[in-house]
Figure 1 (cartoon, helix red, strand yellow):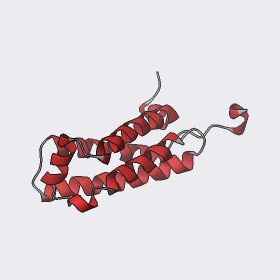
Figure 2 (cartoon, helix red, strand yellow):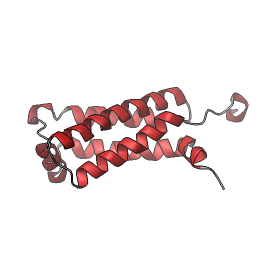
Figure 3 (cartoon, helix red, strand yellow):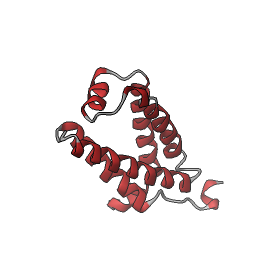
Length: 128
């Protein structure tokens, strides 16, 4: 049975996270009502919402690179940890301690764990 560390280091987990980030980024291009309401709740200005699809799209690319460029994937996980730390802080500041706060907190823990472990680096012999 694989350990938690083995699961966290599996590049496929990074690729699954990339799919989630890409989907979220697509939903932020013209924010669906749920996302727009979340951004309204934390007081994020309308003029700054272009930021989310760009960051989420770039993070999807960085996470998806885990099998080939594990260092980039780990850097992306570190940056997402910072991103979600800010998101949690915005929810606390806005006293929005409902589902969106729980989601941001969970993603902070998830990306923090990915950042702490980094993806497994395959040996050059294994990739040939």
